[in-house]
Length: 629
Image (cartoon, rainbow, N blue to C red):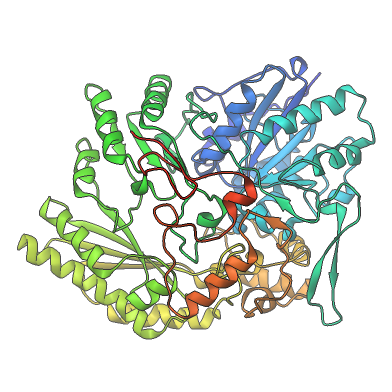
């Protein structure tokens, strides 16, 4: 018989947004734990509004609940005011669907979207009454799992997680559920370690306790050595080869309160082959695999009918690159012409921008346009392999202004490899050129340009993984310099906190020693570190000091391209030799073409994983699977 947590409604009235904790959303699934063979708590280490917007968790939640023998429920991080109430009253962390204590589930799974949410994972485990360190958890405790992009450098969390899942989980999740259910029905042979040995033999699964980390006398990382026969030397990600028939939820959860992205979501394709050298997602989700427009329209009809949403967001890493986008937009607008359902696109590449498409999708609602040139000069755009030109941007903006747009947002990064002040001045120049273009085209002076600049963070599995993060003081100097160049009131300038980017880099390139830093930071009260009002840099520096770890060693150090990296054993299919070549080409400002439209560039993903690019318009050839619309 499963327990439930009974929360006093009067206490809920004392916290901000109590609807975050009550569940009962439209399309949520409630099952009795006594009627299923496996219970899974899907945990998102951030607040309700962020968690409910995440597509990956929606997919896995619906996928497992399709099965009669599994109950999957949601658990989100309580905001500090709710946490305070829970700790005062002794309420354990509980699920939204049945209010079951998290410690009572068979498996507790975290999604790792962002390094700055790691302290929330520790906090949620503690609030659940689950020992933080995996070595301290007994047989009565749930299996603690994690997946998502940050799992590709799992080492900072190696002490806390029993098993990491690498890659796309639509198919592997079913195997994991079958494995755990069979293990339970067989009387749990070998205990939890026996289960982990089974899981370690399956593709994409990494059990950190089955490896020892080795260091040289200077403390430099040498590698991981398997300690169990079942532990593989290299773990390859799972990949879904056929996105057309892959599961996609058509009964989305409709939130109780407004959330970050409160709309229906349609995933056009997975992957990106542009090859931007800073972009971890572009490398992790290779290759491109498109769904057909017919399949997408069918999904959209079901989603709208089941949710009542009046907006459909066309989501992918670069949605404007969908080969059948014009046809799809026409089909969607025709399908929903009598229902006032709008279609939206996220930020656009300037070279694939079509004003015709933009006009169509904004027939119902008109908003500003967002482009991401990423760098201010062509030299630096070539270094990062962005593959777009100033002419592309100005042409796209000219088209937009001629057709009634007056607001443009431009995204850039700061602190990229080889960046100079001239490149930063190029950001300001570009903003002025766009604004002046608006004035020239429209003869008006009411245009708005927003310049948004984030700090570059070197990420694993990218060509820039060897590049050291710039010191916080240097980023702050660059931010002030760029600010001094932007003086027109029609240009807004926003930038991210340099200290947050620096800390993100320590985890992005960290090894197991970062686990102790994480623990010290959590003990000092760090949580919700991605939220400016709660981020405390001084506490983090105190945590590094207590753990005896130099943050510069992980964040700022320029690494040799031949040195062992803490994530070398976790593979997305791309070879290290390919990334080394891309790094050298970056230094020389040499471009690498898009393998989707031209020849293979040799990253290794397709042959290593046995999967192919699926482009619905390109002709056959170069090993591609091609379809016509």
